[in-house]
Length: 223
Image 1 (cartoon, rainbow, N blue to C red):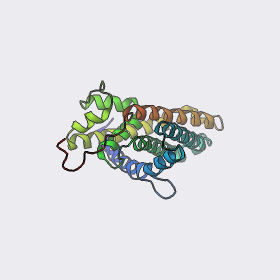
Image 2 (cartoon, rainbow, N blue to C red):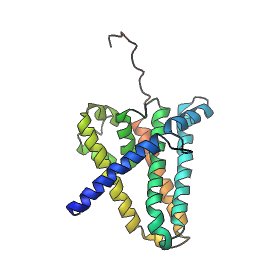
Image 3 (cartoon, rainbow, N blue to C red):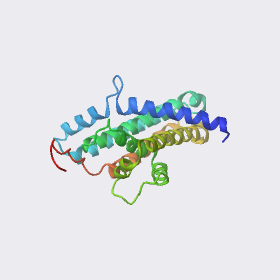
Image 4 (cartoon, helix red, strand yellow):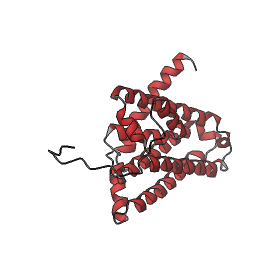
C-alpha cells in the first residue's frame, strides 16, 4: 500500500472508530445505546445475566443477517452504493453487541478501556493479533487487565490501528467478495456471512467480558 493510501486509510479509520463509539455504543435516534439494550434484555430475563447475553446475541445476529441481506440483494448493480453502508451497518451491530454484553456483565461502556476491548472484539482474530503485538498477554483470562496496564497513549495508538484494520477489511470485502456480483443469490449469502460474523463477535465478547466487573470499594476502604 502506498504512503498516501495508508494515510487516507488511517484517517478513515479514525472517523470510523469515532462513529462506532458514538453510534454503536452511545446510540443515535431510534438506534438505542448499548446500555439501554443491555438493561432492557436484563429486565426481560428477570436479571439473569447469561439468559440476557444469549438473547442479546440472538437479537444482534438477526440484525446483522438482515443488514447483510438488504445490502447484498442488488448484486453488482448496487454494490458500489450499498457495500460501504452495509459494512458500516454490520460494524455498528457488532459494536453494540459487544458493548451490550460488556454492560450486561457490569462493565461501564463509557470506560475507554472497555471501549477498546469492545473494538478488539469487533475486529475478531485480527484484534487478538493486534493485542498480542501491543504486549497484552493473551493467556490471561480477559484482555481487560492487560489493556488497563497500557499507558493511555499506547491504548490510543491501538484504537487507531483497530480503525485502520476495520477500514482495510471493509475495502477487501467490497472489492473481493465476488458472491455479491450475483443478484438475488448474493442476498442469502450476505445474510449468512454477516450473521456468522456477529456470532463470532459475541464469542469474543463472551470471553473478554466473561466475569462481572467488581464493584468499587466504598470511600475510605484501605483497599
